[in-house]
Amino acid sequence: MARTPAKSAAKVKTVPYDVAEQLRTPEEMAAYLDAWLAEAPDDAAGIARALGDIARAKGMSQVARDTGLSRESLYKALGENGNPSFATFLKVARALGMRLHAEAA
Image (cartoon, rainbow, N blue to C red; front, side):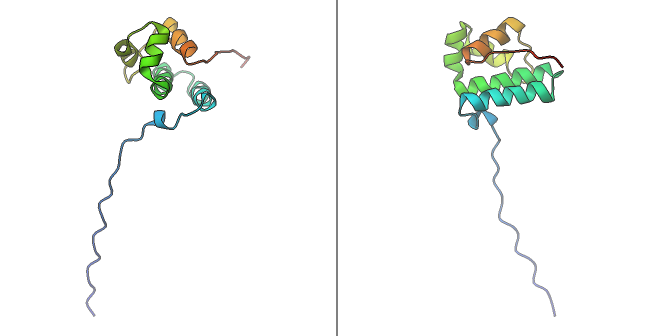
């Protein structure tokens, strides 16, 4: 008995995942940054990108106004190849309503 070929699967359409769309509350934003700090403490670029994800979730234009920096400079500093100064990092964190704290390792 001959087998009939299986019908080809319907094409699956994928869309890029953007974590910024999932960060809705200040608590979620803080937990996301805290997870980066805990899980990848030596990944400065990753932590900067995480802060950029949070800034995009909050609204980069608003963050730019609150920090006194341009949107373009924020996208560059907090993007894939960004390397923000610590002062920029602190300004953005403050504009996002976050406080940094330290604890003994």
